[in-house]
Structures are given as C-alpha cells and as structure tokens.
View 1 (cartoon, protein in one colour):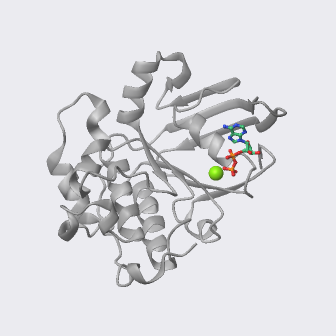
View 2 (cartoon, helix red, strand yellow):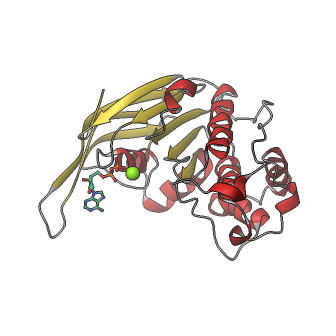
Length: 244
Ligand code: ADP
Ligand code: MG
C-alpha cells in the first residue's frame, strides 16, 4: 500500500493561501434518492440504495466504508460520469443528467475536479501538460499561468518537465491535485486519494483538500483512511449502498 522510500522529504505543507474558488458558499452538490444497480452477465448487484446528500461550499465531507459498499459508484454519479437508475444529482444548481452528453462533459470540466487513487496521469505528457490537460475539455484558452502557480504551490516547480514515470507516488498525486483544481471547480471529488501513498504524502493530499474547502470549495472524499475523520468537517459512513 505504501510507496515508501521514493517519497522521502515530501512532507512539505501546502501553503494555506487562498486557492481562488469562483463561488464560495451555498449548496455545491445535491443528490436526491440516488439508486444504482449493475446488471452484467451475472446476478444484479445493487451498489447504491436511495442515497441523498448535500455538500456546501466550505465543507469537506468524508465517506468511509468497506470495499464494495458503493463508494466509487456514488462518486461517479456525483461527478457526471455515471447516470443513476433513479434519483437526481445537481452540481451548482445544474441537473447533471438533464444535460446532453457533450454539454455534460463541458460542465464537468468546468465545475468538477477529480482525484483518484491511481492518479490517472497521461504517461507521455510532462507535469505541466498533465496539469493543463484539466482544461482541454472546457473550450477556454489553456490557463498556463494558473497551472504554473499550482505546480509551484504543490512543490513541483523543479519537476515541471518530468514524465509521471519519473515522479514518486506523492508527486504524482500532487500533479493530479493540481489538474483537479486547475479550473477552480466548485466541487472536488476524491476516490481513495491517499490509498497509494505513504503517510507523509497522504497528509499533504488531505491538507490540500481541507485547504480547498476552507477557500470555499466543496470536497467529497470516499476513503478507508482513518485520518479522514480527523480532518474532514463531516464524516459519514456507507454500508451496503446506504449512507448513515
Ligand atoms: P467501493 O468503491 O465501495 O469498493 P463500488 O462502487 O466500486 O464500491 O462497487 C459497489 C458494488 O458494485 C460492488 O459489489 C462491485 O462489485 C459492484 N460493481 C462495481 N462496478 C461494477 C460494474 N461495472 N459491473 C458490475 N458490478 C459492479
Ligand atoms: Mg472504490
């Protein structure tokens, strides 16, 4: 689970300066009576059962639960990546699944940032271009200055030309964070973002997410990480597709 040696010396605190969020309060995410099942060749699996949740700007909500309880499915639905069987999901007042697919992709790029356990960086792009990739789907000019500012904030200025394979796990996740925050999204979704990191690198990621919420963003993280309960403003538990 831990990536070990390569991350030595990375325990740098992210500055607690403003992250600059477009809008700072109100309900950023609202999901109502969401349900989702998977029907493959095998039996039907009910992944999410009648879940409702609202997350405001300034809040950092952590959802903890065992493997298989539906956390990733819930996050994909909140992130405009998976239309639920039933229920509604709105982000900054927009009903995600009422949008046609192309408008939904653009909306996602502008309003939602994602951080994944496996980073999902593009292997043949350097740090700078991986961060800028976060803006490709917005249709706006690429925000080079903001990208460089975030790269600096996350302590990666000396790595800007490096490929992901030349970075430690902690550095890779900081690139993914910079990409997620590039467009100043109102909502940041994080799926086990510390799952592949040593403790110090994990702390950096959790602190950055908490800072983003303090600056006015809404953060929803799903995780096994016991530290989440200490840093999040609200902790919920998920069991067999239900939130409590
Ligand atoms: P978690 O992230 O909490 O581990 P998931 O949302 O990934 O949970 O999965 C919830 C349940 O749905 C699990 O039982 C899983 O096996 C099942 N599941 C997830 N994705 C699929 C899929 N694409 N097809 C069929 N079943 C799936
Ligand atoms: Mg998962």
